[in-house]
Length: 302
Length: 302
Image (cartoon, rainbow over all chains, first blue to last red; front, side, top):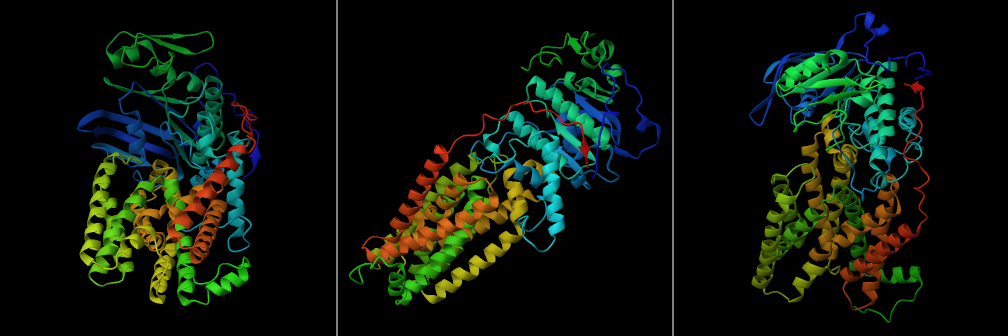
């Protein structure tokens, strides 16, 4: 556990050209391998024929309109929902086998205002909450005092990392949505996972916080070679950090670099209606002509 | 009840006087055992927002105790049998969703009314001394036998031992069920185990405070402690302390006055709760200091 600067790593292009990164040059075992996969929910086929390989350190966004099975993909990777066709391997085994190496952030959670537990305790549960027994206090002399100190230090470290030190000791129910979300990201990071599954983590944040959290996740992904799969509503805050986009739509799916996938012809084909993608001067993508029931990438939240 | 001229206001002399009667020694022993178990279980119950389940279990215990008296068995066995069976029934009811009790409330409300009615019928059939219904509903510390104390102690020791094993994953599953499930914590099984333990704690508390006043020991100490601190360890210790203090005070005051013990335990617990809320709301607030957007550190440690 050594701290090192990331400045040399943070040179990912602000424009959307996907420059091959130096890690990509050598072969790495895949974190996720999905082959010709299909899934059903409530008797309805959500997606099929999905092929996806995610390598360590890769940052993948899952985009698409509501109800198309983005969160379902996350559930499948966690092993909570079986595939009806195809094959899936996660972290070298069947889905669900290595969930303790996965940091998971479910969609849109906010804690009850009356919940009287500190943010720090929430983060600590992410580290060892699955273990049987009761936690001994940190000052208790015996046994396993080294492990307890290491756990306390690790919690402190991830709280620092997400910039939540100022409020980690307050009852989590009293915190704002953005503060809670940072603590939940710290909770997901606490066990030093090999894969992060984040379901709309930027949803409850304002714009400056969205950019900050997106940059933080990208930094962790590269520095610690953690694969990240992020379900997102709006691609713009994460666009400059992305390696791969999985675009799910009612008319099929498309996987590739952001430049390949978020294009007028591709989206037109996926949605079966004319769609144009414009690039603003700051590199943001503006998608125009989505059907009314779909959410535009650059538009305000409905 | 008045057995002497009144308290000397010297706690040591008063305790010596009370403890010169075996029934008072048994009452203090039973009260202490119950206060510890009910406090700890109550902390989890408040955390899980399952007070309604606790209330239901206590009402289910009433016909159990009345029925036991009717067939000539000690009321303790009736409380335990009905509360534990009731816990399993509540656990088997379908749940609306994570944390959702909307379906449950209608079913359990129906069962509560039936339980009270059956209990009343059993008491009427028994035609015993008229006081027994008051004792069952509002508590009685007279006539607690040494055997009953042993039974309370064994059940409490078993329950606390079980809680020591499942405590941490139970807290995880209570606070954050989705993430706990993703980390392979058996959320459903823990929920059943918790209800069974809650049934045991409710059966114990009913024997001191009566069916209708179990919350004096099950909810009030935990709610008071959670108002004062958000640190789980301290909150648990404080819960047990408050439970013990109000039980001992209640027993002592009831010994020297003609009024029932349930009233005093409840009133002292309520006074503590009101005082804690007053302290909490007059404490200076320190939340405005932290800003929403905190700077993102660039150093990553692992």
